[in-house]
Each structure stands twice: as C-alpha cells, then as structure tokens.
Image 1 (spheres, rainbow, N blue to C red):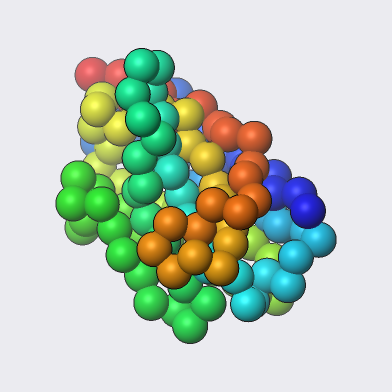
Image 2: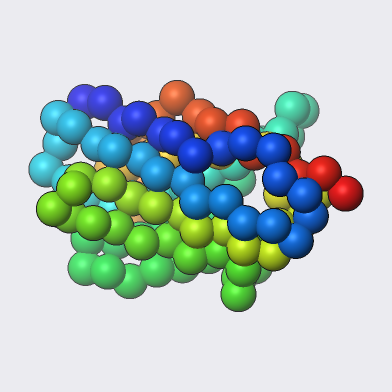
Length: 117
C-alpha cells in the first residue's frame, strides 16, 4: 500500500493550495480517506474526512475554507484549501482506512504547507 501526497508549498495568507494524494495497493473506493495535519509539539489533528459513500466532515477550524474530494477513477483524494491563514501552517498527511471517523490504517509521507502573514 502506498499513499503519495503532493501539492504543499509556501503561500501568503488568503491564498489557496490544492493537495493531492494518490493511492495504490488498496481498493480505493471501499476506503474512507482523510487529511490530517501536525505542527511540532502538537498532536496530529484530523482536518477533513471523506467516506466511501461520499459524506464529508471537517474540523471546525477549516469549515467553509477547505474542501475534500475524491476521484475513484484516479485513486486520488484532494484537499482544496482556500483563505489560508498562518495557523494552517503544518505538515499535512493523507490517510486511508475503514474507520469511519478516523481512517488511519495507511499513511502518506506528509507535505509541508507554510502560510506567511
């Protein structure tokens, strides 16, 4: 199983980024997908989840700004991040699994997002 995250970078506050995570080795459409983020010294935080049936949930801190989506044909999950704030700076990880609330069986390598003020 491999999850390959990409799309991180440096952006000014108010800007946008789109993260991608391509999966292989799993039956993508049967798994739930999620994005987490982590800053040094803090626990990994669940940012957004999209379930196999298409339902989504978001952390309160990113609602109305971030959108998670999936393309089952491409085995890829996306995180569109708009209105970025300095406090969104973190390493973002994609994950997959059968847990409906915190899919965490498989992890990507992480991609750095830095938002400057």
